[in-house]
Length: 454
Image (cartoon, rainbow, N blue to C red; front, side):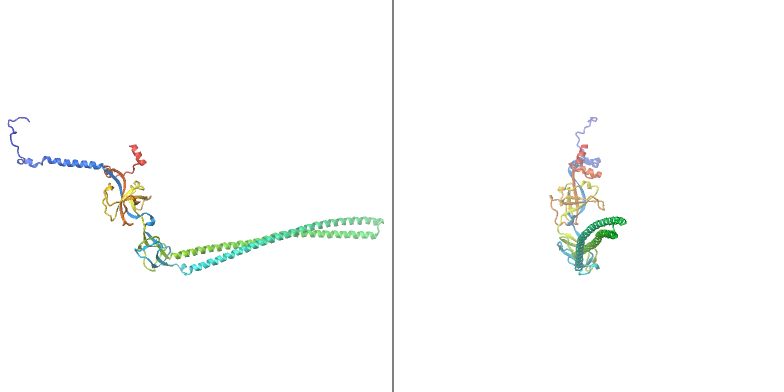
């Protein structure tokens, strides 16, 4: 300090702060250090928390269902239209597969006949008998055709023999005619020479007359031989015509028999077609008669009757009641936003909170959560629903705690699909910027490419 004044204050007593108003209006100077220390500690804690691991996740709502389609609640529909005659079950009853649920009666007039099956069976027997008759007719016509073919061969052989005989006769008569011509020529020459000898007076008139008679006889024999030859030729031609007529005659007969056979075969095929139709109709009637009783498709419990009363008519394919299967494997249907769908794949782990089961959830630290149950992604739909959400089917995780036995399909559930592990600071930064969770996973080709670029 500067010793400007000769007066010293070192020997004076310290003044009390209460004697001065300025000091009373000021706070104690040491109090300001404590908030700074607290702030510093909090800052250190926040920085430390920012580096803690955080499990990214996708939260989605859903409902409990069955894993397999045949294990889900189903409606039991009528096969044929009918009139309800009797109910054999009521809501809440346990049924076995094949148990009778409802009995119907017929409402279509074409099925009213109580002896419909018996009458249809008789029609089938009558048609089968008619088909047998046509078959016998075909066999008879086959025999007739075979007999005509054999007769045709015999007749043709006989006609050929007759043609050969006629040809031989023509040849014989031709030779006889030639011989008669020669004899006539010889007789004419002898007559001519004898006439010259008669004119010279060497031959008598008697001898001349005898030669004239011989010449006349030779001429007559020639005419007879010519007539026989012409007759033989005509017989030969008639034999050829007869041979050809036999061929045409039997051809027409055989063709007519074959036409009758084909007609019988056509009638047989039509009858067999009618038999097949009647048999099909009979089978339909028999199957339809079994549909008068509505049977349980599987073991389960009757949950709701959709139609009630006796005497009500139901349409074909109308739902009558619902049945809940007795055995089922639970699963959960989660509905994911399109932006989160690429982050989900089969086999991913999911944590669930079921309606009615208390739970304490630490978001980002699934290991510290209480009352949650594990699941595994089983299937992912490839198309969005009417609300634009994608359905993800999650089954029970066999390596985690089993799901409660009291859970039933239809209950609500909230799922947390677990993704990659990041730091808390990174997660806060992602949430502030509105970025989706990390798409790339460790070990994937995309992650390797991104790391190489960096």
